[in-house]
Image: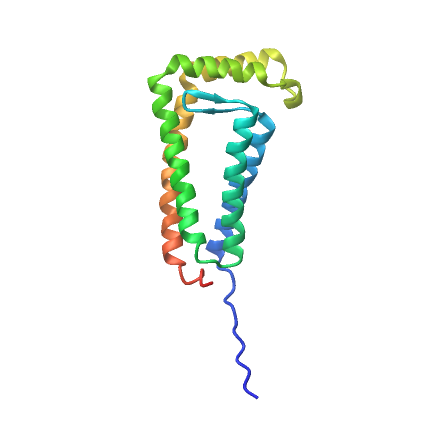
Length: 170
C-alpha cells in the first residue's frame, strides 16, 4: 500500500512577522471603532460611516490574516491591494489637508467635541493642548510621515509576497 503523504513546509519567520504586522493593523482598526469618528480627507465621518469604513478594513485585514495562515493564493494580491489602498488613503488625506486647512481645523474641532475624554484619562487642559498642537500643522506632518512609512511598508510587503510566493500554494 503506497500512501503518499504531503508535508507542508513550516511557516517562515518572515511570514510570522507579516502576520504580526497584519494583526497590528487589525487591532489599530478595531481601536478606531472606539473613537466613533474618523477624519477622512476633508470629511469627518460620523459614527455610522466611520463604523462601516472601519469594518471594511477589519474584514480585509482578517481575510489577509487567515488567508496567510491557510496559505491561500488570493492572499498575495489582497495584501498588496490593502497596503496600496492605505497609501492612497493617506495621500488623499495629506493632499486634502494642504488644500483645505480650514476644513481640517473644523473637523478636528468637531472630532474633539464628540469625544468623551474622561474615558482616556485626560483632563480638559491636556486635551486643549493636544487639540492646539494638532491644529497647528503637526497633524499634516504626522500624515506625511505615515505616508512615507506606508510606502516603505508597501515595498517590503510587495517584496515579501514576491519572494514567498511558493508559500501561498493553495
